[in-house]
Length: 114
Image (cartoon, rainbow, N blue to C red; front, side):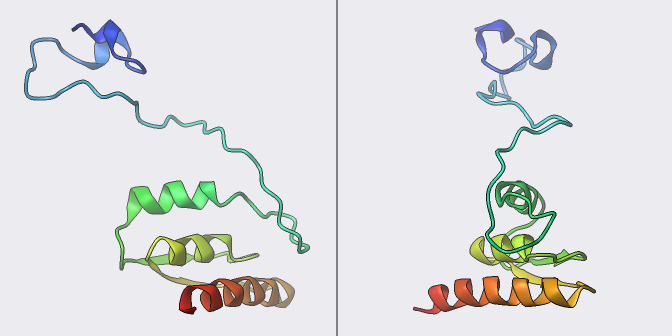
């Protein structure tokens, strides 16, 4: 098999003479990510899709780790962290956003405890 036979790999990314490292079927994420948007019904101007923090949390932590979100907003990162088995803490100065995040997280915590 040559490097050209491996989907997602550039020709120079795998040496054929290295038998100890099998070719990967996927490549690492690059600097530009394409992630579909998602809706959140409450009023927050910068709500991002759950897939964005999910990728970062999975890449940078393991279950039980603590995730810090310094700009909680609507609580998306805290929500995803909890779903992935991480502990989560955040800060937010806007009282309206704090209330949005609290409502959103309380629905998830209730569902998790049922």
